Amino acid sequence: MSAAVDLLSDPDGRDTKLHQAPSLLTWRDLGIPLLCTAVVVGELYYLSQVTLGASQANILEIDNLVLRTREHVVMTLTITVIVLALAVPFGVLITRPRFRWLASPVLALGNIGQAAPIVGLLAIIGSFVFGFWPVVGMIAAFSILPVLRNTIVGIEQVDVGVKDAARGMGMSPMGVLMRVELPLAIPIIAAGTRTALILAVAVIPLGTDMNAGALGELVFAGIKLNRAESLVCGALLIAVLALLVDWASGLAQRALTPRGIR
Amino acid sequence: MSDPAPTSSTTTTGGSADNSGGSEAGGVPIILQGVTKKYPGTDAAAVDNIDLEIGAGEIVMLVGPSGCGKTTTMRMVNRLIEPTSGTISIDGEDVLSLNDVKLRRTIGYVIQQIGLFPHLTIEQNVAMVPKLLGWDKSRISTRVEEMLAVVGLDPHEFAHRFPRQLSGGQQQRVGVARALAADPPIMLMDEPFGAVDPITRTRLQDEFLNLQQKLRKTIVFVTHDFDEAVKMGDKIAVLDKGSRVAQFAAPEEILTSPADDFVAGFVGQGATLKRLQLERLDSLDLHQSSRSTHDGVTPLPVRSTLHDVLDAMIADGRDELPVEKDGQLIGTVTLEDLLDRVRALREEADGKLSRRGDETGGVA
Ligand SMILES: Nc1ncnc2c1ncn2[C@@H]1O[C@H](COP(=O)(O)OP(=O)(O)OP(=O)(O)O)[C@@H](O)[C@H]1O
Ligand SMILES: [Mg+2]
Image 1 (tube, each protein chain N blue to C red):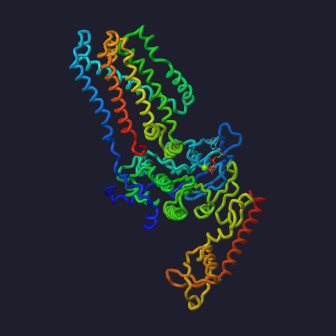
Image 2 (cartoon, chains in turn purple, orange):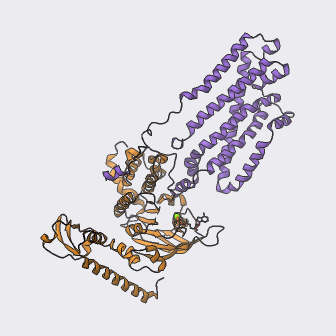
Image 3 (cartoon, each protein chain N blue to C red):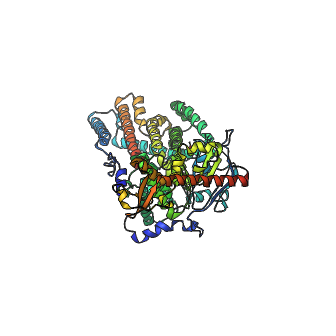
């Protein structure tokens, strides 16, 4: 028996680095936050040095910057929550046998939706409604598509043999979904969510005309006043936010992905 | 992993108690009657009106060409596929009347594609069915270690690995351990040893037969390797296209009297030699002779198969070899004895065949 076991053990020592889990955070992951901090500090220092005209002074006051940034973050988070709460369950539903026939029409519709120019939509709808929720709602509706598509694709790509084994050993359909399909779809769903989030951060400023606030205020004020300081400051903060959101969602994606398929 | 020592012996044997129904065999009978499966959009039925009776505690081997419906037949037993018509009963109960999810927890299934959960460790993979059945933690971890050892994987080395860190053959063995874990009375095994090397395969077969001697499960086992079928099977079902049962009989009978050309083709060359693998030296009357004539010749153990005996005779260039039991010489065996035995087997088979011919007017 022991000879046989020796014979069977891995000849090329594939297991040597197995038992220590790959660490989630490496030094390279600190690059983006450091860069972002540097940009923000630099910009704030610059603003403290230049003399701003009365029209811009209010806008570029630190309190206002914090407020607008917070509005932007809150909108982004709200959109994320709405998108995940709708797209994942709907995507799951579509992959169930009873609704599977819906998958291709929904994906096709999704692709059409993706192609519709969101700026135009915001402009049209923006002439009728104003405020936080219409903007959030519309961007969410738009961002749902990548998450929905990735949920469907993520679940459908799970190996048939694996699903079969799960069913064959006596997992209920719900058990197969929760223990097998969703865990294995997470990397792909997370990738879709990451795309949706960055899209949201970038599109939120376009809702400024609808009185939803956020960092777009700085940009559009800059355009209206024909002042570069405000425009550049807004643009920089939006870029920094987009980078940070991408960074954070990348980390989240890595952390949520089960170790066996990482 | 810790120290649930006192309970370990009971977990080994007690698992199938709730399904054993008091018989000696741990397994239960499976009966297929007129079972047909037609996949939607196909003309020919994948499984066409099959009848098969699998006794409690039996290993039935399904062999047949690729695409003949072995997997389909098997998957109808645990209702992964619903038959188009016909009935399947397990222990007298129509499977269609049972809750499918609960039914599957009492049937170990080794799928052809292995299908380990890539996101779970080997330990978690093997523990899955016991977990679904609500076993407590210490019982599960004892059981997992035990099962990994049965399939020849060192628990300390493999328990915490992920499937992708195992070779194909190792994964396949985990698949077998996983199916055995909850000690189900029935096992469906779809080419479970297809990806392992011949040495490991032989060891796994022996290990499995040993285990089966204790557990007496009812096992349906698909293989493409006829020698494996001969070695493992209490009975072999040779299937043709559409799962037509060409012959369903004990290995000895299939080897000595194949029902038709199709079966003969499947048995392949050397049926007589394969037949000798099923006979052991202790079935022969040995000759007594003086020791001195056999100096320098390694005696054969009395548990050797006649196939091994013949092999040794050819290798040594002798027509008589000594036989030992527990280190004591107990006699000799001659080439003439082997030929006599083959002749007797042939006559026995012919007798059976003509008797059956008298009764039923031909082989079905
Ligand atoms: N889901 C399906 N839909 C349609 N036809 C199928 C399906 N599954 C199997 N078949 C067909 O049914 C027949 C039997 O298939 P099955 O998988 O049972 O064969 P098998 O005997 O297990 O073959 P192998 O030895 O290659 O595993 C084949 O002709 C196959 O093409
Ligand atoms: Mg098959």
